[in-house]
Amino acid sequence: MFFGSIRNLKPYNMSFLKEFKEFATKGNVIDLAVGVVIGAAFGKIVNALVESIIMPLVGILIGGFDFKGLMIKVGSAEVKYGIAIQAFVEFVIIAFAIFLLIKGINRLKRKEEAAPAAPAGPTKEEQLLMEIRDAIKQKNV
Image 1 (tube, rainbow, N blue to C red):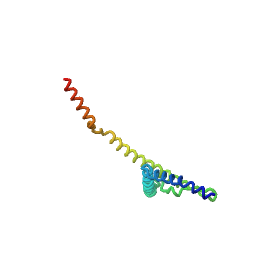
Image 2: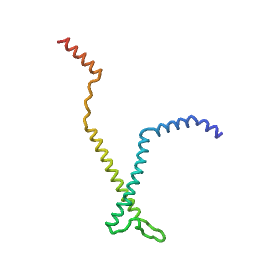
Image 3: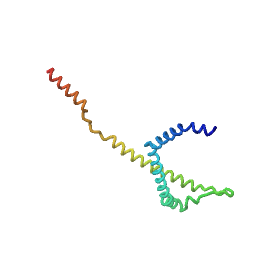
Image 4: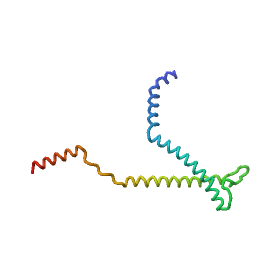
C-alpha cells in the first residue's frame, strides 16, 4: 500500500526536480554561490592578515601580549575572552574592507550612470513618418 502511493507521486517528483533545476541554474543563485566562495576566500585572507600582522602589532602597542592568551579561570573551566576580542577585531576589519569594496563599486556604477548616453537616431518608422510629413507640407505649400 505504501509503495503504491510512492508511484503516484512520480509526476510530482519530476516537476519538483525540474523546478529545482530551474532555480539552481538561475543567474542569481549562481551569482550568490560565486559571492559566497569569494567571500570565504576574502575572509581567509583578512583572517591571516589580522592574525599574523595586525594583532601582533596591536599587542606590541598595548603592552606586548597576545590576545589569544587572555583568559579567566573559573573553577576548572577557562573563559578565553582573548579569542573573542580577536574575532571582534577581525569582524570589524572584514566589515570595513567590504565597505570600502562596495563603496568603490558604487562609485564606478555612478560614473557609468552619469555618463550621458548618445541620443539614439530616429527609427526607420520615425524616418518614414518624417518623410510623409515633409511630403504633405510640400503639397500644401
